[in-house]
Length: 174
Picture (cartoon, rainbow, N blue to C red):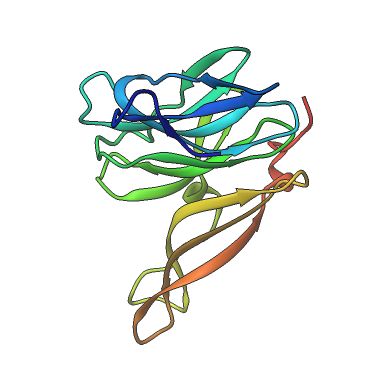
């Protein structure tokens, strides 16, 4: 996975290599796009600049088309899809309406903020996560790994998390 220049010194585009041929997967209208992961069905996820080249959105490439997964209501530039499982569930990082980045799960065309599914703390509260910033992987059992801002009672650090979303009925095979 990754990207390749479509011409000498040109912008990066994701590609699919099949039977000795590189197939350019295109963009969401902008100049640059990049692929991060592929599942066993050939569905590909990554990020692409939108038409203005001012926004980068996560995408899902399925059935010969690149689909814009959007954001969580924010307008920050660097949103991306990091991983996809064999059920077609996508995880990554997207900007929220308040301008911060949040971990997301996208399933069936809907994007879910993972912060809404966990108990978060505050810097005056007990130890725990303040925000889940990114989701970096998802397996076929619906377990998501990522990183977030963690309050240990004295300072804020970055920590990894493991989140099992199967109890929410979201992670079912299609």
